[in-house]
Length: 232
Image (cartoon, rainbow, N blue to C red; front, side, top):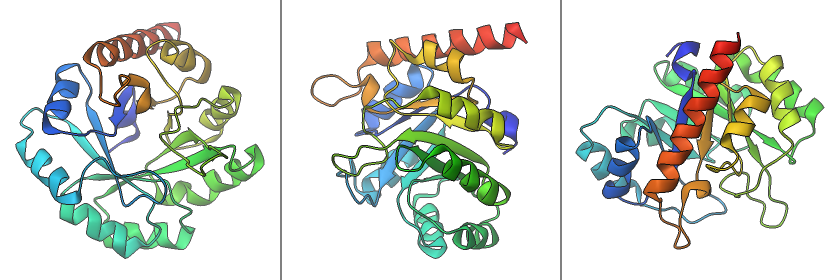
């Protein structure tokens, strides 16, 4: 996948059922994220349930395994079991393991998280430089000091830090962290990321993905991306 493939990416993570996955695709979401093997949050689905959902989807979409695993062999095994072409890594993985993962699965697209709040801006830039040769994209997200989560926190972070990382990185940078239909347009215009990701920001009070929120999120994101494109 080329860098252009991440351009204007819209991902929704935390799918809880086949019906939810189909609804997201119908609303124009092309990237579906499935968090698995997590240290903090409870998984929405078992790995076997994710496989059944992926085999039942007929509309074109990119499925992404989101995990905190930090061993190349385990990440490769999970991606093969799920039969996905992309992984999003939120764990504190060593550069050597990223390099090994590319050797084991050269066809696998790797997105590495940059957690704002867990690391300071200087540390994040160091991570970008060290990991750039072994990843296809980065995703900025928010650290929650209360429960130690570095994803699905529902909290925004300082977008200026993400904006600086977008400018600094040679790889595409996706923006995540507390994005909702109400703030995604402002976030895109401020940060100018390659794409955006949301999880809790399009859920109802019961933690289920809300069709109206998803549609508005997609519309607002597309509108902001189009405005940036026209201004260049």
